[in-house]
Length: 294
Image 1 (cartoon, rainbow, N blue to C red):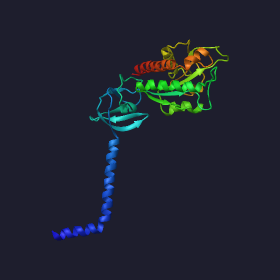
Image 2 (spheres, rainbow, N blue to C red):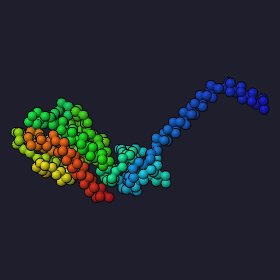
Image 3 (cartoon, rainbow, N blue to C red):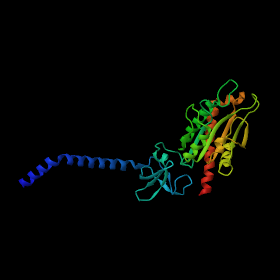
Image 4 (cartoon, rainbow, N blue to C red):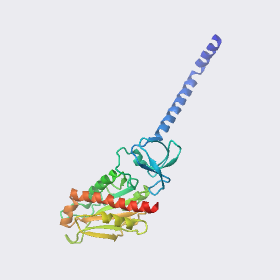
């Protein structure tokens, strides 16, 4: 027995360095494996999330996830997670809702949608001017941020083409919606007439009629019960909606060079009224589309 112990001691003395290296490598590998496995696990934070057969709001619903349910993430795609449940069944769920901790009153198609908001102009492109020299770009950004806040209350994944006063080249704006595989696109603007106080009101523009843009424009315009003249839904040849493959609209929510309109445009109350109306219009559109699709 003593001889065996001596042999082991001699072996350890001779090979201690390689042995230590092997132990460190094994420990590191095990630790990394545990970390990676942990990262692929997620717990449902809010109830009633829809598990779908395919990713996206048009994916066929399979079942509803419960709060506290543990899931394994298999794949991530366009903001959606493919997950495996404890019973080994799989499906897709909106990743941003899976991470959300604030409860939702109700999970709707708008909750599972990705919406791109485009505050018109920015940076060196100031847009239209008010009668007292105020820039359109200032108010489009204010309005878009208010809409973003309202949409996020519904759980919507919101992407802004700009969040600060910077220039975003027109040709790049439609690409944001396409690259993020957005469900909807809304561009915010304020109009201008050749002469001061010549025109008033708000208009909802679409370019494509067959990709959902026209139906989206009608739905949002119907929801826009504003204290200005509703000039309705019109065709608009604007690059940001013309070059967009997703349902896309452009809102002109008043005239910068009309004194009455501008008083509304710069008003927090008016902006909040628009901000509450837009999600209603988007929700109504999506509800009809998802119902038809199913």
